[in-house]
Length: 290
Image 1: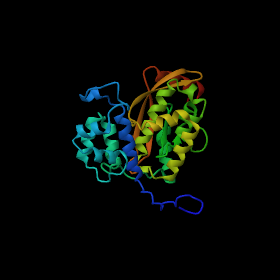
Image 2 (image 1 turned 180 degrees about the vertical axis):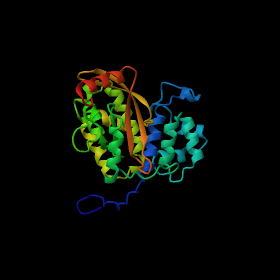
Image 3 (image 1 turned 90 degrees about the vertical axis):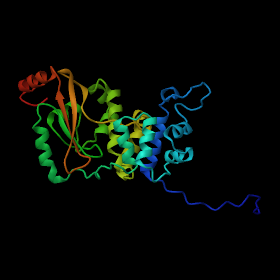
Image 4 (image 1 turned 180 degrees about the horizontal axis):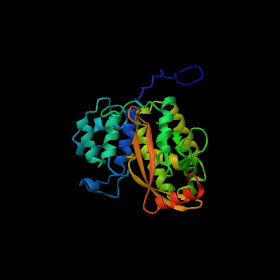
């Protein structure tokens, strides 16, 4: 005891540094575990369960691994998880193909190239690509989802104003986004799930962390979606956009990767039946793009 009657403080132990990818892998698996019911994997349920979904011990048993080892994986402490173990866990947690690939990437397998972004000399070519898609919308996103290039239709239809606007900031922080996108909640969930997949190789990046922190602090919806650790392929899907004069327009959203520029994607909104004729007639009448 010291003179003032307090116990001497214990030596401060240095905190173990956790690899951000392994931490994300653990959080991702924990969230998916909470979504699987015992009945789905052939286990008896019961009202006395204190946690949603499966217990860690149940996942370990069904995957054929030790309970302590699986706990380490969820805690981000397991540095050498084999592809075979991940495949067994993925089967128990009923992961789809996009989720399996995401888990493998986080564990160091099937790693995508380091995101490089758009160089200044890329912009003329990218602008030609998106302008060549007129009168339909087209734009380019880098690995932070900054809009590197956009044609006039995309700029006006999606509100991509300003110099290098960020798509996520526009989607979550611009009040007009709800009016432009009639299915805003669906669009928001799809965007966060796709962004999480594409940002998997940037988890230690300070700029990515700052962007996520800003969006989490300013948008409760983004914060809730980000906390779910859900991932999804950003491939072709339907997107509904409301135009002030043309009304609701239906597009098929297609994402294309740029060779040699990992993390850079060209987004093309291809008009569905009826929408193409409407946009072309409007553009011809105005002598400009939508």
